[in-house]
Image (cartoon, rainbow, N blue to C red; front, side):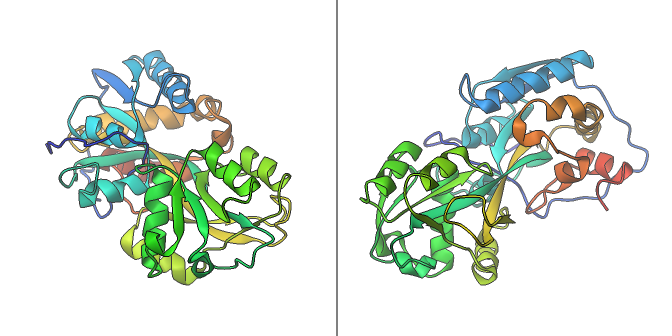
Amino acid sequence: MNSFSLKSVALGGLIVSGLLVALPANAQDKTPDQLTIFTSVSGSSWYGIGAGMAEIFAQNGVSSNPELGAGLSNVANVANGRGELGFTMSPAITVAVRGDEPFTEPVTNVRVIAALSESLMHIFVDGDENIATLADLQGRPFITQRPGSITAVVFEELLDSQGLAASDLDLSTGSLTEQQDGLRDRRSDGMVSIASYPSSWGAELANTVPISLLPIDDAAFEALTQRMPTVGRGLISGGTYVGQDADVPTITANMILIASADMSEEEAYWVTRTLVENIETVRGLHASYRDLTPEQMATVPGGGLHPGAERYYRQIGALN
């Protein structure tokens, strides 16, 4: 088992690529002894989802409980065996596998049980300014999110993939509220957030000030996935926000449920089967899960499904 420490705790996400293995045809599922689920802060949506999942597992005979956590620290806790399951965001897998901060060494012993929801990168810019591409942000005041957040990590990777450095922008960091205020007050020409879709705060912002959404074209997406294969492709449909008439291509990050590679294939199969067989209850845990399907649960940017989860998805036809 990998052993590593965190220099700091931040929300992030994670998925391991290239880790699918051959599966024994006669493997059976096995009920875990217990399940601890690392989530987020008390009162957060992740904590509520974790509590709901714990109840599903308990109703199926396994003592389970949610624990406080954060995206990147959840990776550390699962990888080090402090708990069986955890929530994170898919791009954090790249961070962990590379051993980038806050990890002090590469982490390769985490696998994915399920993809649960998808968030889209929103790059809002002042609609009165002549900003149409990422390159147009050079020299302009722009607010990203705080260091360690998955938004900040992915945005920096996106800039790097386009030959841009943070120093090429008049870049500052802030909370989501500070980002919005900066755009409203015209102290900033833009902001970025990986957010649920459609975003309620984004709609409010677009109703307050003229905005545009920057597209991430195919070339930029391909360049980014060379560096960060754990992001996906998405589209912000035209008319979603006031002032945005055309479709805007962007990138996605998945909220995922992870387990250690040390979890047996049989136990991972049981966890996956239990969630899918109770999918109507899972859909009720959060609004973003309303249309969740087994096929979506099995579709993980960058790969890295736990062999037990992969076996179950293949058996029910959710994965070819």
